Image 1 (tube, rainbow, N blue to C red):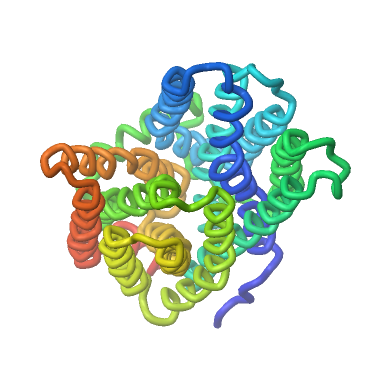
Image 2: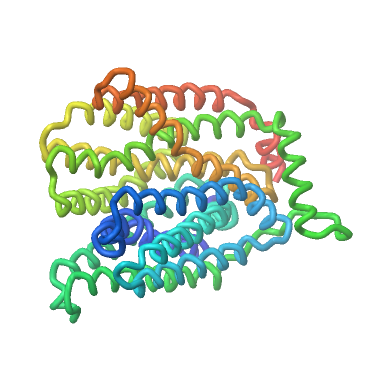
Length: 427
């Protein structure tokens, strides 16, 4: 018998995505990159500000990627994934709010606060993703994961629309100018994140923590468990091949996301048009993520992921032919149709492979691969551009990542789920 889908645990869990997506849209994608260049570091050379911002965020991202599996294991051993999520949420919320208080010229503080906010955002996702197993009925993983991403797209899009309105008509909202409106946007993103995070801590409860040796500290147990997982990785062949596939195709996804705005500017689009495209992706992503959750539940998550990979490959090829704003919006719309779907189904399929009691640890590996999935794409594009001298050919090279990811996904799907599957079958 199927359990009720939209119970209080699922709603509270999804609301966290509604809240933290404000950081991804308002801060990370739209306002911070522009405001950093035009306001905080306006008196600094573009190359110097870009260098230090890159160093700050690069180091933060690298450290978080390296520590992700250990953090997940710590959460499992101590039964404290919610406490870790709370800690990263507080860090992210306070850092994001702090951006609204940074004065002009203080680019160093802006860079540090943004890096800390990013750590809070991505660190929290490790534990938020792992809680999918706690809130979703086993037979509804795909649907619930899709709901989470759909709600996140909608929540991030709603606040971004309000924030854009604030900057277009600051007087209407009582702000002196656009600068004040942008600063208030950072504070609003922090409040949005913090308020909608509250339900997950009041409602959701973790499954029982994995047993450990009471004579050993949680940290020592976590290191031992992590080392054991690395040694026993051959038992998890389906997980290993899926992580490799995920690394490949999500690198392609990330590269397209990072490339889109610069490419839009290169073909002459105004920044206002790019913001409209980003908003369009958010609101298309809402129903699309729900649809792919349904596809994963009713047909197969693998079929859904393959469909998304095929669309992304076509989008990449189409991107090499772009010349007009209309064509850019077509590409953005196609991306919005599959961006949430590939994320949601990847998360739920991976969740179905994980051994019980070790969700934090394994989602730590999952998020580690996600953080490292920003290396191959830019490198591939750079080498191709250098060899061919053609930027459009460089973009086309990203198709290789989707082909490799799809091939590895076939291998992963053919592996027996002996460890996770046999245990769950017995439950």
